[in-house]
Length: 253
Image (cartoon, rainbow, N blue to C red):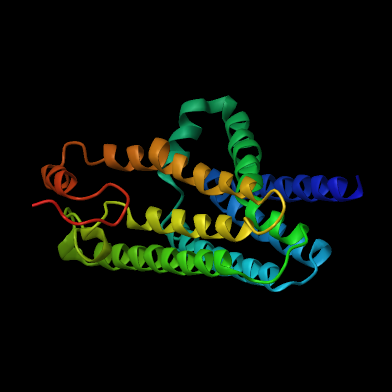
């Protein structure tokens, strides 16, 4: 009961703080930081107060800290370009109901997402388990592969878009030659790797809710939203016909 109460209070305090920052800054796009920061917070919290400081717990916590640092850096770079236009449109569209939309985005949706995505490390850090095994090695290897794919894909895209001569062009080189969304594929691999590591602890199968959820978000929200932007772009449609949507795969000739 005490453990549940402490976790509940931590969630409430964190989400309240994020909502307050959004309103003080008058920028709902700051809510993008909520779920990632929450996963980091919960991972550290469970590691410090509930873990036995075992090798698997330490490794999983370190991986989340690396993931969170990269995500935060990526979001900061995006935030420096200005407020997310999607959120600006929301505020104009909803007017006096903007508060409800903001509350729903920052507290409800982001809160649910952070709890789901924190599941693998929370399970690992709060359950007793033995030493590292082959599942951990495989999960760690998959996580490293995913981290490389996501980091490299983001770097390639950022470098490409910074070149003025590439304005209006479609990136189809590097990892983007083998997948239309290699950064999303890498993110999924990372969460799948953590879920595999969690299989070694009691109820570890529940950790698969994280990779399933993030993949669902990609396929039902993120990817359709991004690709709709290029629906009238002939170059992108040609690229779409020969390039895998998600998994890194051979180019169709």
